[in-house]
Length: 296
Image (cartoon, rainbow, N blue to C red):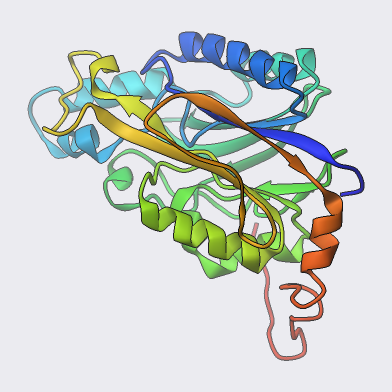
């Protein structure tokens, strides 16, 4: 990372279970982020077409009722990669000269995967990572991912990489990013707890990278009637997106209980300053003692 860059976390609700309309909304919000000066914009986990919250995904365990119907609709509204919807997202990135990072459901055969996609301003899909381990109720929805995308990729902004939600609690998955030199660390999530921020502050300090955590925002009233929500508050996901510096301090956010776009200016000097005393894959790493590898 050689030059200052402005980035954005886009905390927004999808048009739930409607892929085309959600991509329309993504296009509008990407334009707003670009108009605000951002060169990189991150959207939440599983933004297209919805994150399967435990408030409704628990009903997928039922043998009767509408479990198959709801799963089927989620599958039909998921992305196919490659495909025309992916091409459209690439065009949005290109139109607005953005590095565009999007969380999505991906359908491959009959299995849905939770993916993080990064598109370049040239309209290229440069990073495609499937979440390694679906957490708890998510295992009713998603298949397990693999090692592809467990690396930071070179961009015009610096080295960008990311992990999805609780993958960020996996030490070896994090180290894969550290070893590849991550400078802008993406952490789309559905964890809207205060405790999540404790982890994000630690990971920013541990990675000595800038960290963007973009969280799911959903309202119960936005769900179609066929989705059976368990009793609870109107907010199914209350957000909590934030942008953190390499010392774990906040540059923007957290943003709770509403849609919005967070912006922050990233200064490359801070990357070098914070790595004087600790560099997780550099002078504070002992490859003569530890051996690490990723199976792709």
